[in-house]
Amino acid sequence: MADYQAPLRDMRFVLNEVFDAPALWASLPKVAENVDPDTADAILEEAGKITSGVLAPLNREGDEQGCKWNDGEVSTPEGFREAYQTIVEGGWNGLGGNPEFGGMGMPKTLVAQFEEMMQAANMAFGLAPMLTAGACLALDAHGSQELKEKYLPNMYAGVWSGAMDLTEPHAGTDLGIIRTKAEPNGDGSFSVTGTKIFITWGEHDMADNIIHLVLAKLPDAPKGPKGISLFLVPKFEVNEDGSLGERNSLSCGSLEKKMGIKGSATCVMNFDGAKGWLVGEENKGLAAMFTMMNYERLGVGIQGIGAAEASLQSAREYALERIQSRAPTGAQQPEKAADPILVHPDVRRMLLTMKGYVEGGRAFSTYVAQWLDISKYSDDDERRKHAEGMVALLTPVAKAFLTDRGLDACIMGQQVFGGHGFIREWGQEQLVRDCRITQIYEGTNGIQALDLMGRKVVGSQGKLYELFAEDVAAFIEENSSDENLRPYLEPLAAAFERLSDVTEHVINQAGNNPDAVGAASVDYLDLFGLTALGYMWAKMVKAAAPKAEGDTSGFYSGKVKSARFYFDRLLPKTVALAEGIRSGSQSMMALTAEEF
Ligand SMILES: Cc1cc2nc3c(=O)[nH]c(=O)nc-3n(C[C@H](O)[C@H](O)[C@H](O)COP(=O)(O)OP(=O)(O)OC[C@H]3O[C@@H](n4cnc5c(N)ncnc54)[C@H](O)[C@@H]3O)c2cc1C
Image (cartoon, rainbow, N blue to C red; front, side, top):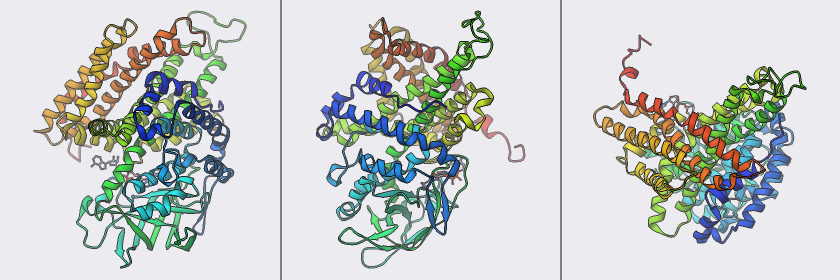
């Protein structure tokens, strides 16, 4: 297994050359106060060192040792506590946090790069800062001033970590039927009672306190999703002076044994009249959760790219070293018993497919992060509203497409190793196991597809889709006279026309057929994602092509050639997807239960 090296060159290319992030930051006054290109660069450099040097070396041991439960206490794999301390000391937990409460106020476009490095280096560990950041976001957006002052500074510092407690044994996708209850105590606090399952880092020994954000129902709450409230429930109560008080009545009942991310604790959490405080308004808990979900869901998409990047780095190195058979065109390295497997077209297909999804996915996550930054920080109402629309539309694509393709890429990386990919030693099998969860949690990918097709596209009668379509059309129009880009713009325009036609087709079908959306949704999200990455690759060609000639490093010329592969071999998959969607729901719904 190659040692993970943070892909800083590529991240700088995406940030500075493809998206001109420094110009974006300068246009957002609240961001400009905190970051300039030099600061951003120093952060990237340091993030690279910590993730490659501290987190990556613990990845395998973490997987082997796992977390251990002992009478409600959870101990983490060797080295995790020290690594967590390094993350705390570097202030990484609060990188994107609100400066009013001790966060660093860095834009998501930059934070996303750090997240990718952390998830690529050690996904199990990376979930702890990720969940803390998510909990902070929800608290910052919806908590009272008092709660924010009391909890956020220590959470941004990482001295206290955060957990999100939504899922119950009988309620995962359908949170409307949760049973956890919250009874008012009459002093502003509530007693929370119920059982939550699958709670990531719900209990552990790395932080002094764990702040749970728990979904529960008030007495007499309306049935369904409109009767859910959000509560902050700390492991230890916090005294007026900020010191830790009594142990709250919540405990970790057990840890799940699972397929991957074994270094992380996945907890059953029992709340037994635990003291909690309302976050936001009564019965508006799900809406409060959604604030943070756009960030978290992009973060999960980034986990997919991160795992795939780690897999690609190893597979590339292996393909250069492993010798098997001769190249079809004759011996390339006659002095050796056989040629490196990189000479074989099929091995190249796998590596280029991985590159297509990883590098295209990195650009896409940065593109979505850019809209998140504008939606959060712009002081221009219209610009902000436009960005909010883009975020709403693109978030499910980022979550599901990047994790689906992330797993595909990890499996290809494993395949490049042949039998050795199946063997523990090389690390590829762990990446496959770890990456698999990204398709499931934070809302399954099937549910992301329904969100995209049903709520966002059909729900807005195509208006949200139009925002994205206009952005792409403007790019095609602006660059129509660019000779370098022409061979990419034509297939991009064709793919967009296909996507737009299918969008209109499903919107029309949805009015007459209740199954139309569900039958189209997953293929539609795939079609959308492939086309959106085509757009990203065209943007990368625009930045790289003028520098490709005479490029001795191979960076820019490699980028342009990789783009050609994407357009020749991956984008055409949109034709088959469009055809399948047009066939409608009939064949999907025709079988009776017995016929299954
Ligand atoms: C390792 C791990 C860590 C996790 N971490 C957390 C955490 O920190 N906090 C937390 O609260 N939860 C966490 N979860 C829970 C996770 O978010 C849920 O497992 C996930 O949302 C799916 O819920 P479920 O498992 O109940 O599946 P179900 O909801 O039962 O779904 C089963 C299947 O039916 C499909 N389905 C369900 N409803 C529909 C529908 N309306 N239309 C179409 N298809 C549908 C789903 O897509 C899925 O394929 C974690 C889970 C795991 C395994």
